[in-house]
Length: 82
Image (tube, rainbow, N blue to C red):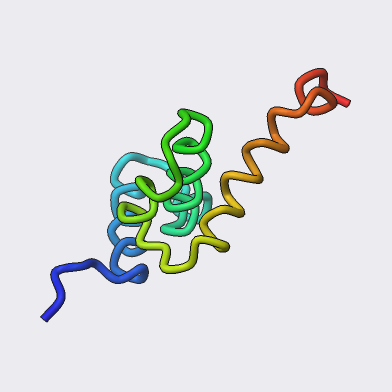
């Protein structure tokens, strides 16, 4: 028996807590938490292989996409609002 929460369980918990905090649960998701974690880990310079156990990504290629995303977000045109 696994002690891991399923994505569906995380989503239900997150939405319940959003409602309790007076936030719109439609604006939040388990995927958003996971992708936000990976993007921030990349921004913070955390090696991909160190972030993957926390995010439970099985594919380096899939996880690396979040690191690439944050690099694009820091490009000069985005920084100056173009």
